[in-house]
Amino acid sequence: MVRNKALASALLTTAALLGVGVAPASAQSSAAAVSCYGGAKTLTYRYSTSPVSYGTYTTSSRCNDINMRLITDEPGVFLYACAVFVDHTTKCNHDNTYSLHGTEWLTVATDVKDGTHFVLRVGPYDTDAQNVTFQLAY
Image (cartoon, rainbow, N blue to C red; front, side, top):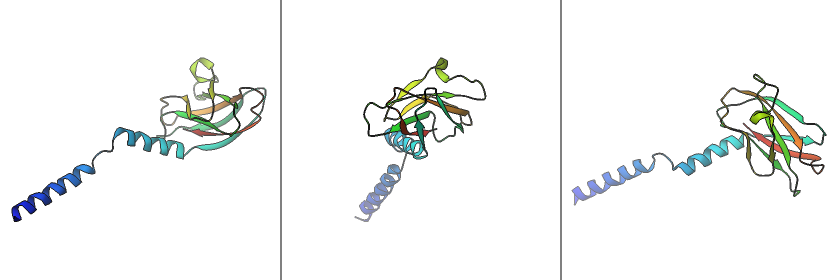
């Protein structure tokens, strides 16, 4: 009987220690997303016929990408955005193109090295984009 209790105690201890191991991949990616987006800057775009620049910002290990989303309840409001890596160029990434952004988190630039300096350029999709609050996570 004592032997069975000792064995049961050892098994429970081992199971508890094994349970403390590495979290599943989905939990890890969720935690990474929370820390990345948790450090997001909130900015406001005011309508302009030419792109508006924000920054210069410096990427960190908090995010692997430069991410953006709009904060609006108004349907159909979108902004174009691109990243300009100012230490290397005056043009937008992706062959000087802009990507369209709405209320979901989307990447402006992917796989950006830590310590990279960039400016975010933002422009309107149409005239509905008058005063639009957005978030930038990098």
